[in-house]
Length: 81
Image (cartoon, rainbow, N blue to C red; front, side, top):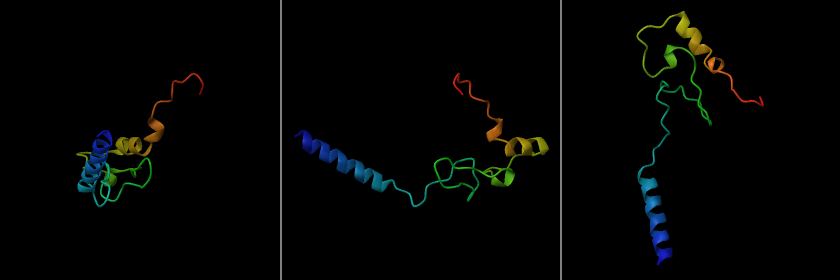
């Protein structure tokens, strides 16, 4: 009985996954169409053209901040780094 229930659950899950599949993975919300790079961690190009929504205003400070994003993260606070 338990084996039948496990088999029915597996078939149901497979049908669910098949019904909810998509042709292409969706790009992340902040990325403009075609800006997502393939891989584990997608990367967006810098600048307002690479954004999904246009910012109301964009100045040199915004541009510099966007271009230096990975470097603008705070350093780790680990004791062994």
